[in-house]
View 1 (cartoon, rainbow, N blue to C red):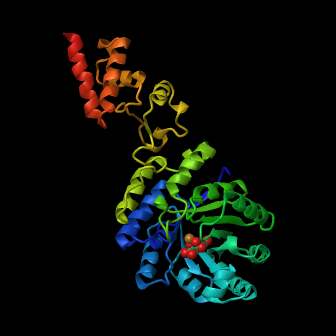
View 2 (view 1 turned 90 degrees about the horizontal axis):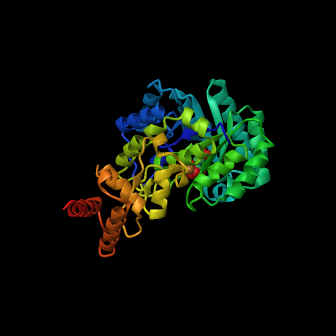
Length: 379
Ligand code: HCA
Ligand code: CU
């Protein structure tokens, strides 16, 4: 689980998000921000998609970023040639292997898929470019069929095979079983791609890593086709707990918020209120019991240290469920600590609760309750 790599697909899968339109300037900003964050790979939309997609792919390859640049194309010779022409470090090949896709999309048999894959892999390798082969809709494909296919790709020398939960229907256990089995069949790296239709995209990625996968596809805020894929930030939150030393030394976690803000602005959405780490309330502690313990030792109620991501915690005292320890801490912040006895803190806490039973309070309201109480006790 420890040493995984990120294939960041905001500029490929993310471009399939309903609101996404990235001009070259925006793509460059995002690519640079991803590079600064420290992702291993940046995946770009197929150059076959349009003229601008081709030109932009070339331009991003020339930025000289530390991250390797990939483009994602269908598994056929024409697409592969166009991909190599752009100057990418690697080509991600994809073809549908479920009966749905074979019947309703491209109409090819597994035998035909294998023959094409062999030819295309040999071509990309001959150009000295990294190559990955992925079966779209892996979890609704025939297991024996795809294992044979992956094995043939491994023998043909691919750098990675890819498993994709294209429709977001897989569970962590299904993922674990498939990746474990695949791990026993191929020697190459294993890349994974999880859609979030059933809310399992982060858990599935973690499960895949536990089972021996090496690479996870992400996008910033999870943007992608439908409701998207494993979000980069949520995966970081998960993995900083699972593998703290690796994650903290490898990724520039303090840059997460600005990276998310950049992408959120580009696609005109907000960072979700309950986003791991960066959501506005991700580090707001409210109940009196929580606040007391947080003030004594933050780890009591925080699994991730907000400072690792450049965030700060907030103890809210503006509610009926607050407690006197939290109010005392606020009184100290206001510089009035020495002027209140504990009994007086308890008394002003009661006043805050009384008011909070009547209407929602903001921090200014509670501060003025504290201040007017303070004036009263001075006279
Ligand atoms: C799609 C393709 C893909 C590809 C994933 C991969 C998917 O848009 O349908 O290359 O591994 O989800 O299957 O994003
Ligand atoms: Cu996808």
